[in-house]
Length: 402
Ligand SMILES: NC(=O)c1ccc[n+]([C@@H]2O[C@H](COP(=O)([O-])OP(=O)(O)OC[C@H]3O[C@@H](n4cnc5c(N)ncnc54)[C@H](O)[C@@H]3O)[C@@H](O)[C@H]2O)c1
Image 1: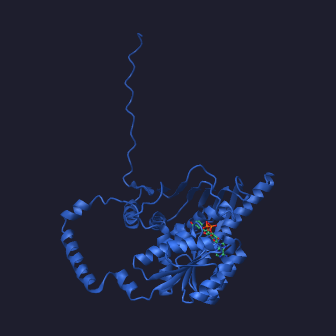
Image 2: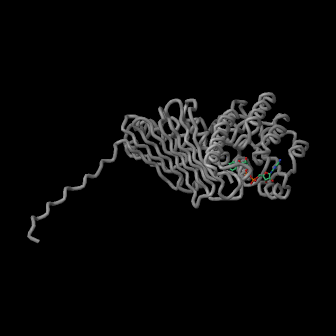
Image 3: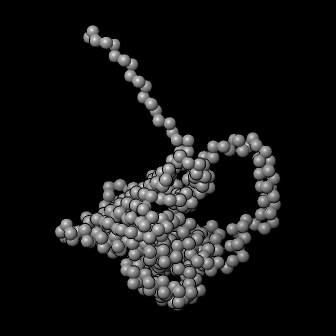
């Protein structure tokens, strides 16, 4: 009571927010870049450019642009473009309008194949040079439902489709992975360009066979590694200089789908492909653990991959979680980048599948190599299979087999 008056506590020091901290946020993805280097400014520019289409991103200096002389020049340039486009049409439209429609089909219209059909139909409605002629599913009632929904014809087999529509030039293959080879090979041998869903195949031998078939048929063949078309991933790509550590989480709730493959080939392969594209270095070591929980294949897995460059990547994938989580974080000298998918994409943003299909159609039309060739699918598959073999090894050592 009579003790000394307690000293006033020293004010808590609030850490300063780094100058180069940048965040972009909406109901889809939150991207944050923290940088203590000048590249922070470049990050800002890169992210603004890359994300503006998909993420509501505020350009804070719009007022100053208005007030500057550049505004006058911008108006003059806009007027010039308006005159040019009024005379010749928008660049995309001009290119498509002069082109013959690409007749396309979707093989396998289950949960994911329906999305391919929906996007082709949407592109067709939007006036793109594409025409969805048919959908194929061994479950003819399913083919019927999807064909009615997207106004095309249903078929029970690829042979029936090609016999009726020999003009089909491109097709998405979204049958279960174990049927990718048979379906895609039939199409390629008939000269049809293919977009094959991921994982490319259940084994490296089948992946090799697909690559050989594409080469000998001389067709465009793309693998559906969707993450490459995720706007946040695309915007981050140019920022990656010397990655040292990745932490990736992809957790989903259980659905009785894609159970012909384990969680590594089902989900983790998306992130393996993205990180392999980010890190330009050979692999040094893979360690992994995983277990079946609800299916008889591995449902939850963790893998730690070390690259020759010294970079370490830590992946966690689960299809038995109580919530859906997508996180990719990494750091490199003096920079930390975090991408967190918050919820479902807003309807206004171009969804990655649409960007992927557009890129595929562009390769088909221009006869150019696809952005994600089958070789990339094979590379991701080979790492995924190595992860699986490490999981088996780990389970054997600990006597976890069930
Ligand atoms: N890129 C992604 O994010 C993503 C997401 C989900 C699934 N996928 C991939 O898409 C493919 C399909 O997965 P899903 O979840 O839609 O499976 P699914 O089981 O829901 O659908 C597969 C459909 O293919 C049909 N089918 C089976 N064999 C066929 C054959 N030989 N010819 C024609 N149709 C046949 C089935 O009747 C079914 O309707 C798989 O390779 C999967 O890995 C990719």
